[in-house]
Image (cartoon, chains in turn red, brown):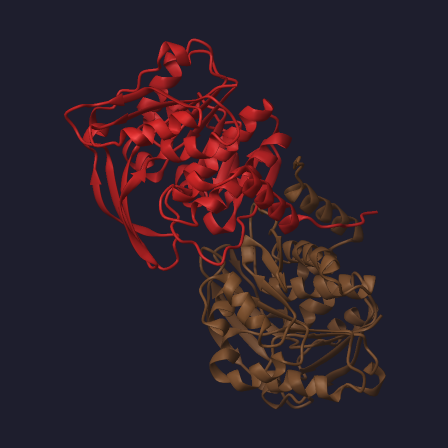
Length: 307
Length: 307
């Protein structure tokens, strides 16, 4: 069962109240691939990098079952670079630097070898590029998941609304759901947003967990209470990777199975925040993932006798 | 199985973005009693009111199994009055008026008929009064639950720390847990606070649910996602009432049963916020409670196959 992942592969420099990273590997598609490859192969990556992106990183991903034929390498330009500083609450951050570099010319091309993929994860990108990928696919995937952000709601709302009519699952955070819908209540926001196209909506609330909506059903997945959130960068992308990885592994896109997929995504995100960048995701073992999933079961499991 | 409830019985006037109430019945002990009496009788109320508190309200509570012998009626004074205005997020509010009135002289007395109670719910009050009630009891209850707030951390921290050594369960919200412990991480905060006395700690996060800590165990209960939060006043007290009501009904104070009790508390709180004051709690039926508990099961229930 193959999964196409579209998004950035890039460099980040991160400051948190606990420390400061060098220029390290980042990018939405990188996090998705590291998370999803624990559950399913191949992951078929579509991205763009510059001449500064380390060949070893691409090789490492390949070893994990990530195809990189769709990763364009631009020889005379640099990779996308983002730098940010997190506030004490680790939920808000200031962007210090955004160097688009190769991203300014990104025009994603789906390689022939990727055709027929049954799952498509559209990481946060210009909505018009997300749409272009969908249109290049000769067979519509079983499930298309789209991530986006407030920036596109402000700068490309018409394009975003168009691509929303073409996808099955939308992932946004709570403030983005409010912005997109104009509703403060997340329940009302969910109804409006599902009216825009996606049958499923996931609202991410960071340390407060995530909500899954579908028709009149709602499911809530908590975040694992952690002693320390070291670096939240990539947690949302890692969540997306665990989510689509579990769905692709089980080949089941029902609401019931999406509940489990959200728990898997939450478990993967709980690893991501333990170290800078994708470091922790590179180290995590199958046994650690099992143990963490068990912790989620313990966290929410209760007995009740109903009449 | 009897439950002693100590707290205020009072008047509130509430403004929210959705409307404005007249002077209506409020007070921590009132909400606790309305919620808990759905599960167990008698509730043995200890409070103080003025000559303006309606006799019908006390009679209504009595009909629900709430003993009011411990409610002192001061003939020449008025009841405690609080008025506040909620912000758009419904999580923050400004206090407009606080008239202590009878509360300034409150010196809670445990009637002889209340002795032997197995559960004690100490609603938010001056810590020294909470302590005085514990000391008046000839037999220590099976479980003592204490609610408090930031105001006492600022004005009576020494008294608060003393009463904390005497109780089993502490309930605070997330910002209060941070203030009491000096830790930002709620997991670290919980460890420090449990070191101050209570074996169990409940951290309430409003619309983001609640966490229960005990030794190295943690349980998370979500709040029900609602289309509209009409008035959050009393939601925390209602949660406490559902919690202790379930424990007293089942006579089981294990961590496992506290998980269920927190779900019951969350369900009761989800009713409370649907109308002004305790209106909705007065109307709620056993069938509605069952249905709502089922919604909580649906909200967090998932299947996972672990190796």
